[in-house]
Length: 270
Image (cartoon, rainbow, N blue to C red; front, side):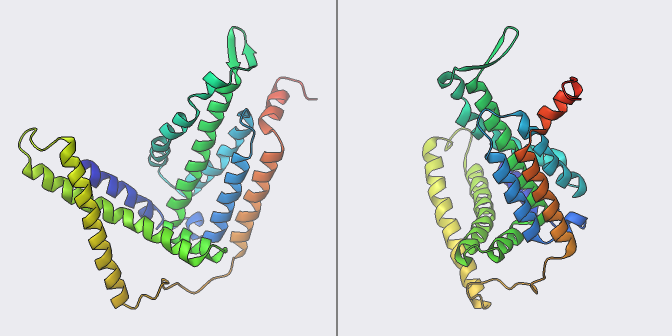
């Protein structure tokens, strides 16, 4: 019960962070979404063996976290939750790709280890950028921005409902877990059979509650769209933010800044 409640409160904190008053919070959501999309496309477009060119891209999430006054430890914890999935995807690469690409003394680095490190690094960069964007903007605002950028309205609406349904599922799961704990004595009723029954009841309870919420929305005049504020045009600050980061991401993608800086410090460049 405590873990479910803690996870629910931890998820709601992203929405609370989006209510900040910094310069980045006040920017138009479309500018932040487009800048993040360009950043993600540039990061994932690198070759599987490239690692050093990805390091300068840390400047984008670092800038957003610093200027947006976001909690670094909290966001790093969110990225750490996704890291095991990236590790599971690339953990077999060293066994299948044994081509020697780098040798530092007695240390032999194969292509599998480089591709594995590249997968983990790219996952950390992209997931960190997405969580930072959500903390600065809020998921509902992101869905509205995607809709105004051309995403089909039904798809954007389904994304918004899915995000809200997570809270309903977590709340019902917390109630069901508490009820189960109150009815159990010692180890009685703690087997896999009880968990299977619990999941079935949880699905039914969340389905029924979602239906009640939908009926309430219809009673209040919901017609398939959410009421929006007056559509504002992109301001100069929004265009400047988007232009700077798009230019910087493309420049970092087309040039290996890390290699140039290393060559400069080692005296290879004049």
